[in-house]
Length: 377
Image (cartoon, rainbow, N blue to C red; front, side, top):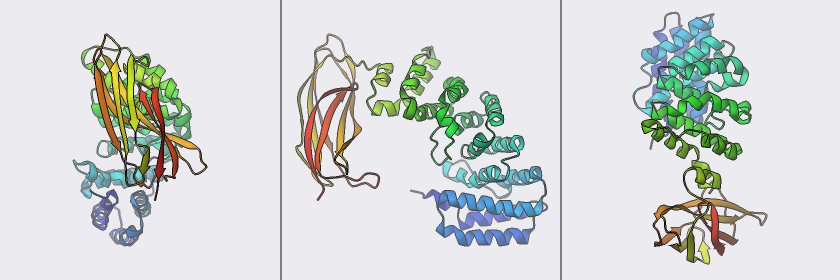
C-alpha cells in the first residue's frame, strides 16, 4: 500500500523545479537551489509538512520572480502542465496539493483571485483543505462564492462546496464557525442532495454525518422533512440518508434507525443470549450467541448490535457499539446468530483488566446482557 507522503518525493521536487524553470521570469538557478534544499529536508517530514514545505518554497521562488499576486497565481496554475503534475488516479492527483496549499498560504487576502484559482485546481485535485482558511478569515465573501458554486457545471466544484464546509474534515483545519452553525451549512448543501453525481452526494452525506457528532437529533429531524421523491430522486435521497446517519446507526440511535425503517417496537423474544464469561486480550475471544423468535404476524427489519462497556483506568466504563447483523425476520420465524469478537491490542485504545459488560441491542433497544471478565496478561 502506498505511503502518500512519498508522492511528495525528491523526484517530485525535480519535476516541479523543471516546471518552474519553464515559467518566463523565474530565476532557474534560484529555483534549483531552493528545491535542492527542500529535497534534503523531506526525509524528516510527513505528508502535510511536505506539502507546506513545498508551498513555502514556491512562495520564495515566485516572490523573487513576480511582484504581483495575479502573475504568481498564473504561474502556479501553469505548473500542472509544465511539471506534468497529477493524473487520472487519486494518488497522483495529490501532486497538486502543494499548489492549492500555496494559494491559501500566499493568497489569503486576495479572496476573489484565490477562489478562482482553487476552482480551477479543484477540477484536478480537490481544494477542500485550502478553502478552509478563507472560510475562517473571509467567511461572508467566501460563502457568497460557494453559494454560486452549488450550481456549477463541474461536479468537482460542486463537491468542493460540501466537502470544504464539513465540520470535521479529515486533514483539514478546524473551522469553529462550521461546527457551531450547522443550520447555515445545511442550507448551503441541501440542494446538492439530489446531485446527478454520486461523488457529490457522497460528500453531502459525509458533511451531514459530521454534523451528527454534536447535532444528531437535529440532523434526524432535518432528514425526516425530506420528501421521498420518485424514481432516481427517491433512490438518491435514500442513499444520502443512509450514509448521513451511519454514525448514529452504529451507535444504535433510535431516531436514526426509525427514520431508516427500523422500528423501535420489535415483536421479538430473545431466547438464550449467551456470551463468554472469560476473555483475554489477544487471546480467547468473546463468543456470542442468541436465538431470536418473532412474535409478529408480519416480517420485521432488524438491526442487531452488541455493545461492550470497557473498563477505564478510573474504574468506570466506556461503551462501544459493534455491528452484528441486519436482517429481515419473517413472521413467527426463529433465527440463531453467533459471533466471535476478538479483543486485540490497538494503538487507539488501552484495555484494562476487570469486569466488563456486554449488551444485546435490537433496533436501538437493549434486549439483554451481563458481565464478563477480561484479562490482559
